[in-house]
Image 1: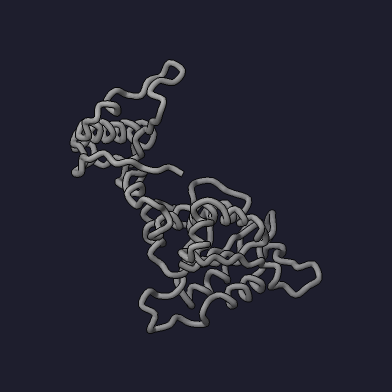
Image 2: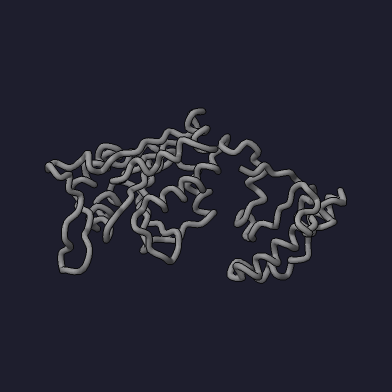
Length: 256
């Protein structure tokens, strides 16, 4: 997958050179480029923002540098022979659709993602409108809160999407058992020692009974989800809460 990021703080993304995503870049699984929006300005101050039409607080990012930056990355028009529809252009925005694990899986199937990191009061709407005529544009929100800029949101999305690209995570089975993959939160995890500061590992996990372990883990998923995220529980899930997963074999999961 190719990933392009446009930001006025390109150094923010240096962290992508470490851990799993760093190794994925070295292995050629992810081709990532970060572009400095100020490189596409033409005044001595490298200005990327101006006051909003209609008044109001804050500043709005100007369309000209965004247009030139995106022109340098995106095709001028959709390629009719491109089966996958070309790049997906993603703008983090509190006004966008909510980012979910399902969306991460969907975007992990794309061949190219382009992220535009807005700042201040946002990007001139004409940038979104124009590039929507040249490809697939999505406004995406991490949740119901406001950040200073899009960089943190883009980092979170790339982390969630990148680890789903085949080959990035060493043991693919570890992805299956995580929170949100089956609509539930993940069960609690334990490791050695069996007793720590007066707290013991649940005996069922030491039993060697894989069926009992799978049932316990499923029950804990339901319990945790009902307590923390009851909105995720459907009627079907509640009715089947005591049924163990179809595959009752306990699986070991490496954790990064």
